[in-house]
Image (cartoon, rainbow, N blue to C red):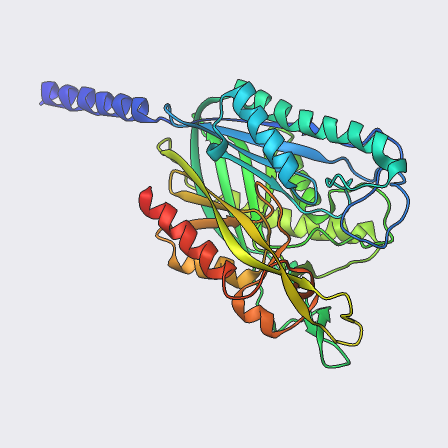
Length: 421
């Protein structure tokens, strides 16, 4: 019996060793400061702001997680910016492939959509051109540096995901006094409160990176604010990092938030940024503690572009009087980027997606964890679901898309890519 027990113990140890050797995930994470040092940069998101930024309230960052399954390597990058213009996506995807050997289709470069950072678009006024070009170069360098540092820190890793709920967002498409629709607060409108947390651990089980996926605009601070800030997404990420004593990189990924505003704002009170950031951050920490991680997971990726008919408002449209007309415009290309890591599917969309598209994709996806990531690998503006066009509000006025194409094009496009994986 003693011999039998020894044989069973040795077999168990051998099985445990074999299981450990089978763990194939590796991951590394890094954070790089891209806070402006240049004076008077034009800020993003509110067309009525004139002049440049007037100081820094809180720093802004690029955060990167690089993942490998032993055969393929991918990068998930979150940058505290309003969006990723096509020219920046083109330059950065080529640069990351060239400098770090990560193929274009394995890159998910996403913006948090804060309205408190410098603009990322090149159509700046001449007086802003020189400092903006200097900041843009540092921003691009920051993305490359974050990926380089994350790749250099790669180690055997474990990964898992779980969900919770946070009540810091609300539907913003509200009925106005004149009977039309516009920006406001609509507590009866569709609003997804789901917080999804993806946690990467070391082989010993210590957290090294946390992804916070949630649908909300970064607009607690409104158009009167001229200080640089990561707004609500940045505050939530910093809260999580501080909770773990700076040992974890926490990156925010925007879910379909085109019709979702914070419950506070837009205003001019930074204490509200801190309050909502803490609420979202606390839920992210709570959910992170419930995640079960595994060392196993295949990395797979693909991209495709769908093309939809375009339109624009006519010059004589009057939004104040709810008198809107549209005319045909150039077709619009929308890049879809699918990155699967283990049992989690990241579905990046190059635009500002409304909620119902994400809900439909999640319902029809074969993956239990399907995370639509807005503002990824390009920026085509607002992408409404088909039903949203019946309520002609700001998101509909400025969208470049005709109804009847984007919703099904996005959902079916991802489903077809998932079928191939």
